[in-house]
Amino acid sequence: MLDYFLKNYEKRISVPNQPLFEIKQKKQSIFLPPELCILVGIPPKIRENKRIMADIRQSLFQQPYDRIKSISHLNRQIADSAEVKEWDLTLNLEPDEIEAKVLKRPGILMFPSASAQGGF
Image (cartoon, rainbow, N blue to C red; front, side, top):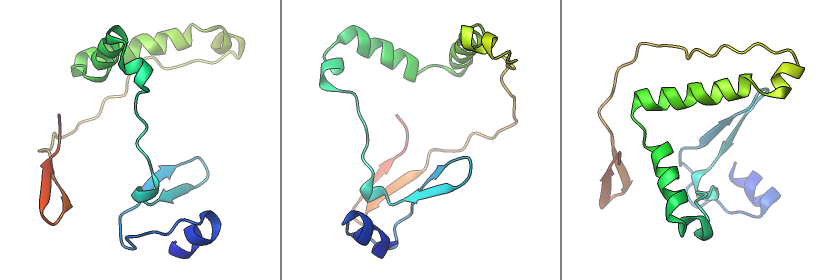
């Protein structure tokens, strides 16, 4: 992997044993070192608009019931779209249900002398 990124992208990997991000695709998975990935944020122009930021916060930090309701509404909009009707597709609008256990938020070790608690 070290040679691949150096040869193909002229990028030197500084930590050879770091965990990789897995990006799953239909036919294969791609693995990327975190140090070559960037966090894409909200552009400054949008951040300055308080109304848009309030809408973003409201959609990101929803209670589980509200999140299901929002997703169901989006599914309904997609199912009612002209493209779905034109292609004669049938969509299951009910969310799948699974049994799950809620785990304690993990601590994150960033480097030997600092750590952070997960969550918001």
